[in-house]
View 1 (spheres, rainbow, N blue to C red):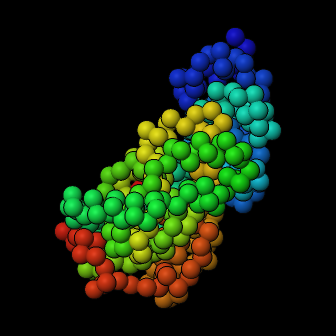
View 2: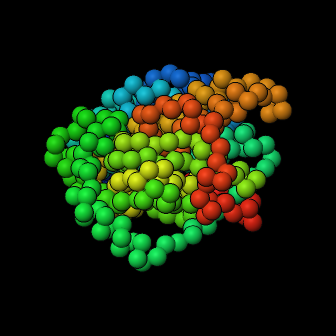
Length: 378
């Protein structure tokens, strides 16, 4: 067994991967030594590679603050490597002398063309990593906007069997759900996919008619579904803990939300309520896992691009804010609300006015639950 091949086989992240796959792809990697303090990649620069830490330790920084460490056996840089031209969302430097096994984005593209299982393995790892980063960013935004006060959760008020039957009857009477293909084509990179791939992904999504005022899910709920708006409007609401819910965003056709629950099983970080009657397409974890082959790769790459967009946009908003919380102006908090809405969903809409609106009497009763002060990331 060769040097790089042996190093890969002994790396924790690849333990579940077939040795034959590592042997077949070992030549795509190169070893690189870095000295203490050396910067590997800077925030905002184009991503041209990912790496595995063979030895040593790396520090990850955003907004000029340490947000994590990458140690021996872990992947780094995979979050941006799967989308051509994707800028880095963090700076990575060596904390100590380190040895890395590096895979260029060109080599990654070759693995994709060859249909290598290593590509699919790395893509899944990258998707989970980026989804976790989105969740962490959402948590940080919530803390910045609320100070030490946590965002409380709420409980579902439920619904009657009659109401469910009535909703289904209305759907039949109206001619059924709108085609999902149009909404899918709003997602980044989906327009480059073949008709057959789009059709395969569309077949995995299930339509759901949501009456005006009904919640798809509530802040703090468990779940494993991702949602795509096909028609109508969905509001993203967060409980302020003062008997009121603040609207973070309004989602329209082509908006995608709920990825944290789908990929990581995280509890919902905000509530999503239909502002008008809405058609939503739903994909649960089982359906996600069944999407394989080219359709599975395209779907996961689309999720990567959407999550990357959310992080970049939210980071850009947060970068505009300076000073301590008690020095911030009303406009600063408005930007934080916009950033919170951005991190909750991928959407092409940019409705600045929505982030200013507060709901009290207009908020569904089920949105508020002041008895629980725990902040649940998702």
